[in-house]
Amino acid sequence: MKTAIATSDYFVMGETFINRHIAHLFGGDTAVICGRHNGEDPHGKPLFVRRAPLSPLDRLRAPFSAAYGALAHGTSRLPFGDNRARLAQFLRDQGVQVILAEFGTQALVLAKLGNDLGIPVFTYWRGTDASAALRSKQRVRSYRLMMPRLAGMFSVSQFLLDNLALHGVRHDNAHVVPSGVDVRRFTPAEKRPGSFLAVGRMVEKKAPQVTLRAFAAAAKGREAHLTFIGDGPLLQHCKDMARDLGVAEQITFTGALPHEEVRQHLTGTEVFLQHSVTAKNGNTEGLPTAIQEALACGCITLSTRHAGIPEAVDHGVNGLLVEEWDEAEFGAKIGEILDMDDRSAMTRAARATAEAKFDNDIGLARVEQVIRDTLGRL
Image (cartoon, rainbow, N blue to C red; front, side, top):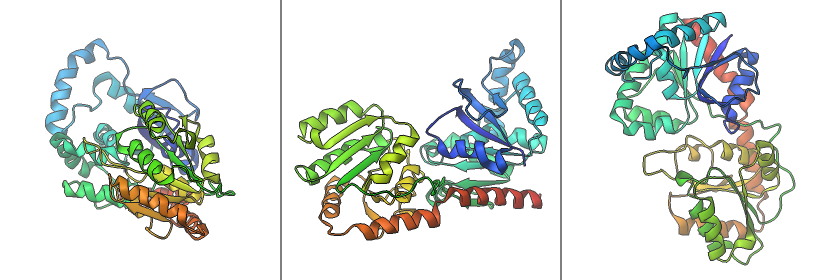
C-alpha cells in the first residue's frame, strides 16, 4: 500500500522511528513529504519538499490563504496555490493511497488536502506535539478541527492520548503503538559492573545536571562510571560541574554518537539513567526510544514518573522510578542499585519487557493492520 510519510525535517539520523517507517512500512512502498530537506537522502524514496520558494502569484495569495486557513482550520500553514498543486500532483503521480503524518503538526498541514484528494490521513503523536503545543489555544482549536479529517491516529504512549483528551482532542480510531526497538539487534552482552549510561540531548527536559549531581552524591569514590552520550546547550555546563564535584574521572562525555555506537554502549551497560522532566514550556517526552533500547539491552533503568515512562519501567521489576526533580531520591536509587548483591533478575526483566512490548516488527505490523482495517471500512 503506497504510503506518503510526512515529517518536518528530512533526513534526521536520530529519528529512528520515522526512518523505520520510511524504509519498511508496507514493504518499503513509501514516499516522503518533508517541510525542510538537509540534502541527505539515504532511503532513496520519492521526495517532495513543501517549503519551496513561492511563485510571484503565490506571494500575492499568501496573506489571504493564511487568513483563510487560520479562520477555517486553525492553522495558517495549509498548502496553497502553485505549491499545493505540485504536492497534489506528486501524490497522484506516486499513487499514494494513505498519508501517515509523523507528528500532529504535520497532519494539520496535510489533512485537508488528503480529504480533497480522497486519500485517508493518519497521524502519529510523539511528544512535543501533544504536550507543549497544547499550551496554545490556537493549536488546541486546530487539533479539534482536524479530528474529523483524520482516518485514525497513533501515539507512542497512552499518556499522550490522555493529555490530548484533557484538551478535547479525541478520535474514535486511536491506538497506542510505541516507537519500538529492533530487539534482534539491541541485545544484552556481558555487563560491566558499575557501568551507568545516559543518552540524549543535553537540554532542559532531560535534566542532565540532575543526573550528574545525583550520580556524584551516590557514586563518588565507588566502583562506578557514568557515560553521557549527547550534545546540546547544557554539555559544557555539565562538564564544568563534573570537575567541580570531583567526579570528572568517573564520568565520560562522548558528545553525539552514531546510533550504532550508542547500541554498542548499551549492550554492555548495567544501568541506564534518564531523569526526564516537564520543561517550562510544557514540553514532555512521549515514551523515549532510548529507554526502550536500554530495556532491550537488559539495562536496569532508573528514570522518572514522567509522560509514558511508567508504561515501560515497572518500578522494582525492571528498573526504578522517582518523581521529577527529586534529585536526592534519584541519588538514593543509584546507591540502592550499587548496593544490590545480584542485579541479574532486573536485567532479565528488562529484556523480557522489551520483547513483550517494544519489538518494532510487531509494532510496524500493528500500524499496517490498523491502516488496512480502517481503509477496509471506509
